[in-house]
Length: 488
Ligand code: BG6
Image (tube, rainbow, N blue to C red):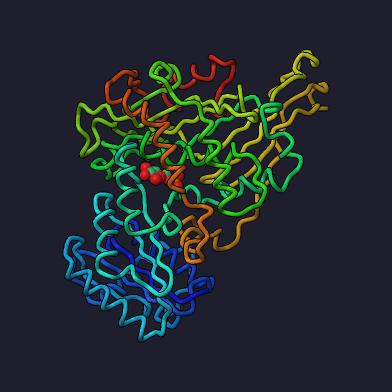
């Protein structure tokens, strides 16, 4: 791998601590970091290089998946790190950063490849990008890349504005928009599932599939993020990005070749065929909910409006369910259902594919459920098939049986999303990053929902913490003769 400089904005923040430093360390242990790398952390506080390295070490000890932290190797890893204080509005600070970057490039004899990672609040994205350009940090003899965290915009217009500003400093191929769901192994596996399995490939369309259900339920509430979440809601926090990305990965036609350009082309086609929501559709096809108090995992928890930092009369959605239609030859007439919510009964991200069921009438007195393909993404990674089979212990009645294909876990678990994504970005592989076109099309689809929520044109249903969300979300499926599978 080429030598490089990794500049991290927001290096004293929570994401750096919990995800980015541990990911870098795991990559280091797995020998997936470039042999020569300079890592420069930036934050608003005063820290010496040494103090910063101590912080990195603490975060690794607390959050790393790998356990090898003997003094020698930890020392070698920390040696790559330097710190610089930076106020994003101060041009002098960018000049100081440029000097440090150059100094380290000389000391370590690095190529001028520079990766800039923005792990900061979104209001700073454009200022930082502009200052990278104006300071000369972006003028390199090697490559430059920008990794950017969500949220990418607050609505369609702000996303376009942000993209326009970023594009003054970075070309689209240089921008790596993180959607950590795209770093999850099972999401990355979706393309291979159909591509590498002709059996599944031949079943993967409206001919055999009755409906597709994508769930991302969480047991946690708003946690300490009310300041952000109360303005975002589940629609911006989960649907516009993560759920639509899973939808694209599930519904895309098999690409001719497995590479970033082809996969992105196929994903884009899904979004282009997604039926736009008219005003009246929003009321029929979208369910909005907000949690009230209840019991989650045996513990009483307060309702959303009682959470610290939440506006007591907030109408923010903590649950969204939707029915979507992809009007293309593969999927015309097949409903896709998505739902996500906080404070639900269980933590589970999964895709359930329900197959058409033509044999039901053949077996009297038997319980014939449809065939289901269940792809569990989080917290377990698993694929299972539900088939029907005669049970000799029950008078030969036909009953559902589940066949599991779970992988053995290794001692250290599999690489986490951030490891995979940072590693891909190091290598210039943008397959599992969100392209601007996908982001824009997603905002376009979501915008009528944002408008309807804003104008209160959609009911806001309460749901008990610890439940599967409002009943209205069940009715959404019932209207088409379906139900959510696996609501235990
Ligand atoms: C984040 C959202 O993007 O994803 C959080 O901002 C959410 O609100 C989280 O909790 C869920 O991620 P995961 O990987 O735990 O499913």
